Length: 122
Image (cartoon, helix red, strand yellow):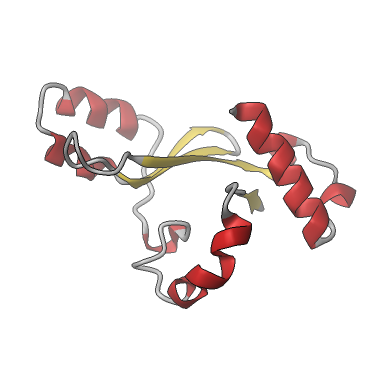
């Protein structure tokens, strides 16, 4: 499965974050270290957490399939009302998104396509 993920500040953070990319446990954008769940796990987890403290929501961290080729990735969970906000991503594989291959053949095309998709969803 090929997944395209683009963040608006990827260009700014690329060189700064290169030192973290080698350590899977510290890079929130690398799903290899993250627990992968089944489709109904998110619904069950949210139901069980209803009314619990902010700290309990840390258990949601992981990847959840939403539909074929579409995955919700919860990278960071807000642990209290004053903490930085939660960080989540929707990952759509290229076949599901139906992005033509010629649009992403080079770095400029990937950036332009990612920017277009990011703006379309914000």
